[in-house]
Amino acid sequence: MYQMLYRKWRPQSFSQVYGQPMITAALKNELKTGRIAHAYLFTGSRGTGKTSCAKILSKAVNCLNPQEGDPCNQCAICHGIDDETVLDVVEIDAASNNGVDNIRDLREEVNFTPAVAKYRVYIIDEVHMLSAGAFNALLKTLEEPPGHVIFVLATTEVHKLPATILSRCQRFDFGRIPPEDISERIKYIAQQEQFTITDEAAFLVARISDGSMRDALSLIDQCLSQGHEMTVDTVAKAAGLAGRDYLFELSSAVRTGDSGAALALIGRLYNASLDMERLCAELIDFYRNLMVIKSVSQPESLIIVPTDELKQLGEEAAAYQLPAILHCMDILQASLESLRSGASRRVGMEMAVLKLCSPELDTDIQSLLRRIKALEVAVKSGNIKVNEQAEEKQLEKLVNKHKKKDEATPPPAVAPADDHDVPEVVETEFTGWNDVITILEDSCPPLFGVLQNSTAVLRGNIVLIDTDNEMFKSLVSRDGNTAKLAEAIKSVSGKQYRIGIMKKPNARVDESNDPLSSFIRASMEMGVNLEVKP
Image 1 (tube, helix red, strand yellow):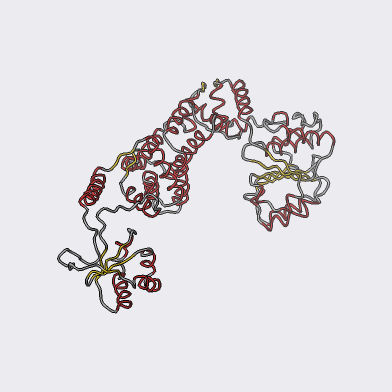
Image 2 (cartoon, one colour):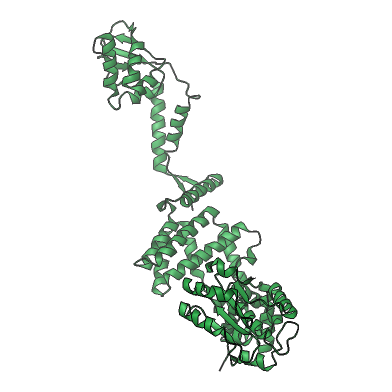
């Protein structure tokens, strides 16, 4: 029966363990000096050698002829442990034996002396899966086991272990194996197994495996099913890195805001049975690569793609702004969580794509930053198209405004004050005008503010107000302010007057130093509808 490469080439001695020199050196020194701990904790990511080192340790402490801390792999004990015929070495899967009863059985077993070996070694794999009760049942035995017992605990999630367990073990942290070490190991195995692999392909396998030797050898097994000559293309096809043009097509639709093309592509992928959750995860990884390219001068070591695709990613990243990339990643991360619990994954993915194409549909801070950055870039490059209809309306308003000034037309009054309505009488000063303003301080504070430093004259039954404040014209006609002003005038003069505004044919107000007027003009100018080109 064919044996997978990761099983066939499992290290048999500490010297064959790749990528963990500090740990293997420490364990060998302990074995050579006889300072063997009663409990070890091996922690680290998958495929880094935790279980392999645990099995090598179980052989080394029982080997009849140890070699400088390594087992000889020739004696009856070493062969028996490899063949699993020596019952003194027990490997327990904590994922399926995680109850209190299982640990109680183990506590009873440790009291028995070894049958053929020197030590009884218990290797508890995925120890973080034990229940709280099982951990408590293990504490006393783990702290003070019989002299012939050694515990080796292995886990990928050390943060789930209680502090009481951690304090009773000698801990070794296994780091991810460097790509260079994995690549060298792959090329050595290729010579022994009589298949060929290029240096670029071996290094690509090492990068894809993400520091896991087991994952690397499993990928090599997949590549061998296609032939005994491995290239970068072979590895890319086996790892699913090839044929991902739809990611670039979808990214192009997002950049240009073409939601129709994006939805059509989602439909094609859905009909081709591509899982929407997987598509979302691939897009997150795609935009992560763009983020790395925009942020790092040499991204080759952080991005796991073939060389040709890396070049294509660089061109795509150049067309993006970093806020847009971060906004896309935020939307996709949130969508990935909702896809797993939503009623329709296709609908959830389509909603996410619409938000990517049209950031104005999203209201979070990342969306606003993306839109602001796009506007800044458009302004700097001059790539702005003004809406022609809005521009014509704005120009028409400006022309009418200047035309009225040139003709010296009187400003609009609150009450109609045509020439035939105003009697030809002599104007007299309204001596009680300051008293009117004082009354407005309580009855209408806005009018009180704009009428400071103003004067008024009487012309028949009309009070003509002389003020330089432009806000008076619009303010006096709102919210019943006309009635309040007329009531204040009546309380001072005892008569009912109409209200008008003094005409100044040749006067022109200097608005250059008025912050409020400047703000109004700027607001009018911003009323022009700007459309930013993609």
